[in-house]
Image (tube, rainbow, N blue to C red; front, side, top):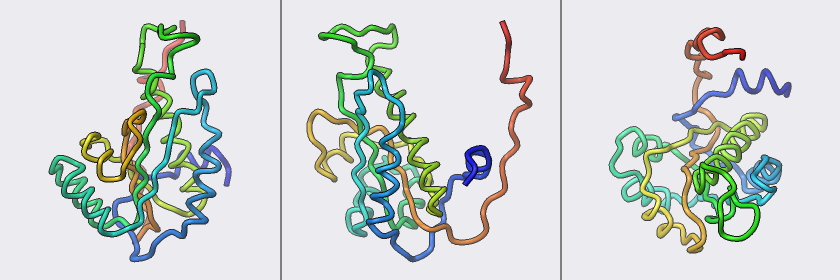
Length: 181
């Protein structure tokens, strides 16, 4: 798939077919997602894939603080990627001091790069995704058993889209988002 077309056509998917994406396809998506850039090539992103319906139900009840849009999206989901990152690496060059004024915020930036790469790769493989940001990271960590050195960045619901691909929402004019100096 052409990269520009892929970027322009990828949409957040909230309605999925009653079909689980096989683990081999998901392994391919994560394998490609590993190529996302990261600070110092530390590769801090981690993917915990959940396709167990009881665990997904637990994420819906205890992992999104009752935010109804996320609860409903999780109820439709056949798979959820818990995107996490290893804490305390991104933003540092040597030792414990951060090399950027962004300090530990850079970890979230690296997770965002990994998230976008995951979603675009999934789209290229015919798998729809939706990133959920209203989450309870501590609860989710417990539900899926993350190691202590990791924290949750986002949930990415995934599956085969049910229904017609949503049209693009309007974008701001390029002159509204661009400036030259």
